[in-house]
Image 1 (cartoon, helix red, strand yellow):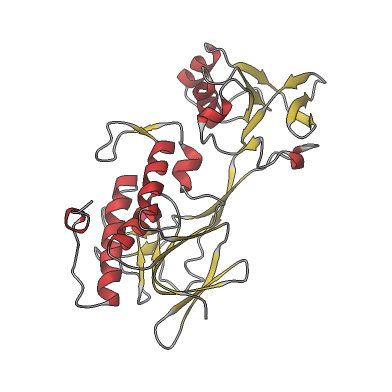
Image 2: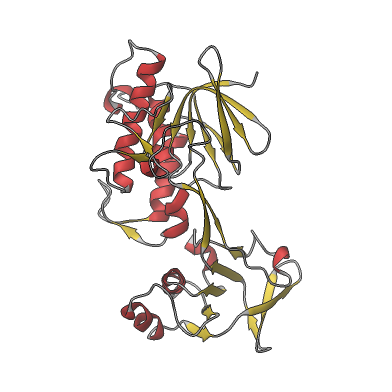
Amino acid sequence: MEELYDVTVIGGGTTGLYAAFYSGMRDLKTKVIEYQPQVGGKVSFFYPEKKIYDVGGFPGVTGEDLVTNVKEQAEMIDPAFVTGVKVTSFEKKEDGTLALETDDGQTHYTKTVIVASGLGTFEMQPLEVKGSEHYDGKQIHYTIQNLEQYRGQKVAVVSQNRVGIDWSLALEGVADEVHLLNRGDEFKAVYEQDVEKVEASSVHIHKNMKIEELRGDEALKEAILQDGSVLGVDHILVYEGLQIDKSLYDEWGLETDKGRIPVSTDMCASMEGVFVAGDAAVYPAKTMLIASGFNEAMAAVNSAAKHLDPKAKSQVYSTVIYKHQ
């Protein structure tokens, strides 16, 4: 049988990473399974460049920096990370062990599970043009993580949405050139001031324009536009919407309510040994905030610890555990 873990966290977003840290702090052997190739979750994808002001202890922190800090915190306890796979089913063994099947054919064995995978998995709409397969995952990006990689570079942002405007403005002053390509003649889901701000910036806006082909040798150098013009480009950022796949919580055998998992304050799901934190959880007066997920993660871990050992303490204090560090 594969290695057995005390706690397996499904979901490597900010809530899942914090759950992993707190689990390790409680001296529980911990694994994290994340569907995306990297951890960070929706914060990494949707607002890495935006400032977040409602997380305690941070009078303003970018999503990227928050993810970096929470990941570094989780790595303090050295959890096992498994990325790029989706949990497809649960099976409870006679001894109570949970066997988690993933879409790569592997089975992960654990004594307890913390579900921190939000409302389901998502896929970004890919840029499918001639030559894109050579640069996807290298110079074609679907999130703006790590602004410094664009410093002094020529960047094209492909988007009809406010996200594209936000990315373009975040790149201004970092990149050497920023081009915003909109395949239509209007931007969608934007406020008037968003459009005014980007139009007043140094961003080059191209409306009714698509990329037809990408060229370069080992590295991307040129984008051929639909009007035949050639755009020198080192990186392309793409946000043309996303495909959200509904959660598999029903298929896992968990009780659900409109795609989320009902819990009480102990964060226990309907299946023994399964706990929930973050957007996946629903209960009266639930708030969908990053900060809420941190508190729920601690409650879920504490419940998992009591499940593993009824004599375990109901909570622990970092000032005691790390008093000699």
